[in-house]
Length: 472
Image (cartoon, rainbow, N blue to C red; front, side, top):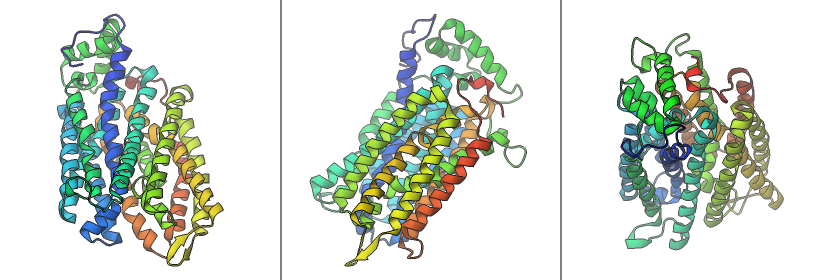
């Protein structure tokens, strides 16, 4: 699959080749999901090992997200200088170091350092994988191929949940010793080493983005890649289109995103998409799912199993998005998802308001608990058939060539800062009597409602458009 691999048929290119290199890029999304989800089953172990309170636990969990913000912010500029593939390779190395180090950590500070390194990897992958896919995929397939990124993210989450469930089950609890005398929660982190090494070696076999190559004066190399992607005739035309779409006076840089009120209008739309994806509270389910369900009376084993079910629902929802995104477009899916999340989050607020203390433990009436489970999984479904995949697709294709890397970096930075804020504050809201689960989810529901109007007024459809047609 490298640039020296024998050419695909020159006249028409090879969709199989495009699909194959897109799948390799989405392994970064898988690790994004796995690294985000693995923490879900380790919270009890972290509290026990590091003797942390609710605020400390919140920071241990959320610390990765500071790295994510830094990784997303730097990845765009660095990828414009060194290449999309190069930055994904660096991210793969960071994934490996973080997975190993998180499992061997013996204190909060050491753990946080390794999680921040993993966060840099996740942040870089979150920006680079969709950028790379959007730059190698033909316009008519770009939505579906870019959506594979979200399939990979959700599959990574699902596999993290499954891995956590199986490891905890084998050990008896996440805090119990398992293989070689190490606690089960440490092994949950070490399981990530397998896909991290696969990602690293697979990246060595794929080509650099042709748009990056043209922007950096490597036109012949770009033409060679484009011939494999779209055929010789189309490659020649595409090189000319890419050249014309790039500013003639300078290479892409972070400064290109500024203009108007701090940022260019299109960058503000990207920031809005990135922030609202987090303000609806989805990562509370991903990071604290086990804690959430235990808070309303489920055992650790049942809570971890519910996570597995939610992961399976997520995969099904993303497949729905994969089928629909190039047929009906990005904007309708976002709008429908916002409406669905508003309703289901509202139901969860009501359910959590019915919980009460029984013998010192939180309990729900059986029928209310059943409604909460159904509503939570419906909420997960609506998110993952809309904002989950579509936000990343939209960010990967909405920016003009000149600012794609830097625009993605800015939006990605705000996405991860929002993620950090939501993740850090949830355990504190949970521990605050007058807020609790009901208050937290009421806030997420209001944000989902606001996102309905944001999509209607601010988001433009990009279905079927060439990247060279995008305007700032």
